[in-house]
Length: 105
Picture 1 (tube, rainbow, N blue to C red):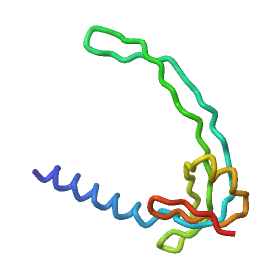
Picture 2: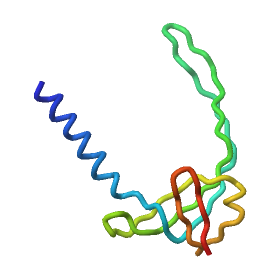
Picture 3: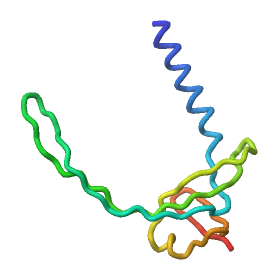
């Protein structure tokens, strides 16, 4: 019982400590485009092996530098839609809000 309580308390502390480290707004410092890729793997189901193709869509990623809630300077990468990626330049201000990404000049 004591081990479960310690694990639960540890999990709560991790969630609390990482929740303040999120960067929601900052300056765009890098952009990268990840090409679509596929690879062949296997899924093991009991005594059978099923060959499977894993596919990863192409992604558009920006990295921003900004302050977290504690006031520490941090970097954070965000996956954004292609239309937003195309309009953002390095040095632009980027603000990540709930459900919406905006670009400010």
